[in-house]
Length: 186
Image (cartoon, rainbow, N blue to C red):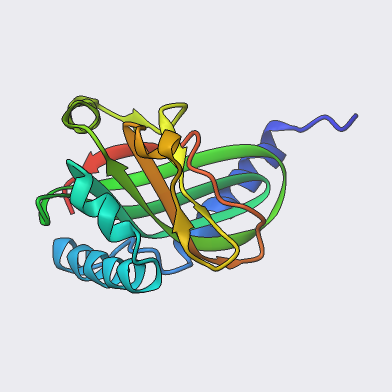
């Protein structure tokens, strides 16, 4: 059994933060205009690649678009990204997404995700919380064999539906469990 010292834990966390910050994820960008441009580009890609997501958009009360989340880890890991909350296709707030993890992991990846709030109550809970954490109330839409996103009846009745796409990198899997979303002023 390996015992981790405080120094090794801090060094691992510092390296994860450094790698995450070095991967062009919007930190130090020009603020709202940059985030809005990335959100539009991400939505264009999502709708053209997965046309069924337009139905989710049309049925949702709002959606949180995170155009680029960078995740890195070497035993200790983290993820960070910034995005916008859209209601009726209009940006109403900006958010950051942050995640920390400990465990068997090595590598880095980037991905995009959209949270579709399917009820006004789910949207209200998200907007009124000081820091929303993705958890059991989030259902994931999965890729089927043809590369299309599919949602079953159970998923379409969920208050929050997550679509993760555009994964690139060397870290296996992307999940939103444990991700904390916090309102920001870009």
